[in-house]
Amino acid sequence: MSALAFNLAPTVVIRAARGSDGPALRRLAALDSHELLTGDVLVAEADDQMVAALSVDTGEKVADPFVRTADVVDLLAYRARGLRTS
Image 1 (tube, rainbow, N blue to C red):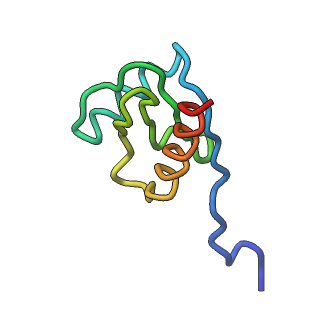
Image 2: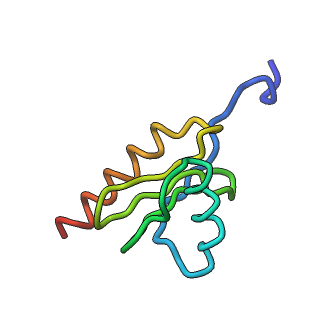
């Protein structure tokens, strides 16, 4: 069976948001019918596309409703908890 026949999970990168992420964060907030996140924000990218974000300060999150993001949001929350306790 060819490797192309498998549905491989995308690589997910979790990182701190930076100033240049403003347009992507606004897009996610609009897609999720949510306000723009405030404070320190973590973002998750899958295959170089921002798919979710979470405010470290408030725990609020936004995610692309057209992408499966539940596991990614859980990873963001886990990382945020680690940042809050350190």
